[in-house]
Image 1 (cartoon, helix red, strand yellow):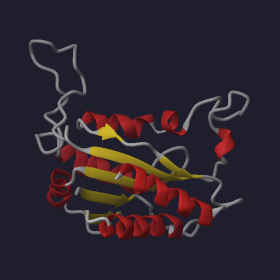
Image 2: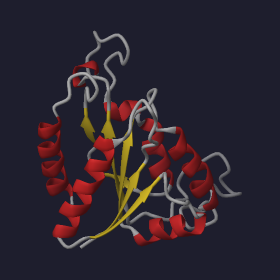
Image 3: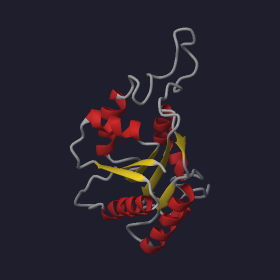
Image 4: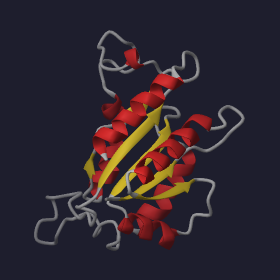
Length: 194
């Protein structure tokens, strides 16, 4: 069984209360605990104590980042979390700085990760329809995938030595939501990967 840290990166606002992301976190917690995994949940509304957050990462061998995609990236509150927690973890808890050595100062950038036995999964909610990705004729993403869009997040986790599990996404959640089907797909995705 695994130790699983679930981070709900949503920041509630008048525009979006975050019910879908919260429900996905609750469903993941219940399903994973039902399989015997230990689960901890962190939200951006919690009091973020850096040392406690670093201890969560050191405890976990699996991390799920549950996040809406706001303006093609994570919410500001999770970026602040990263700036505070991830930066503090560079002294060894998450990584040993950037992995380069005085002997090879131009090589191996990003190889100092301390979490090489850990995996992570991105679970994302989009206003964009699924069809806007992986299609060169689509204006905005020009054939790029969800994982292409989220490359900065993948790079952050790789910086800590973590390996990726397949990404999950709910699409078109504001205009053409198919929530019940999303929940079924999410359950199957968790079953296949945990």
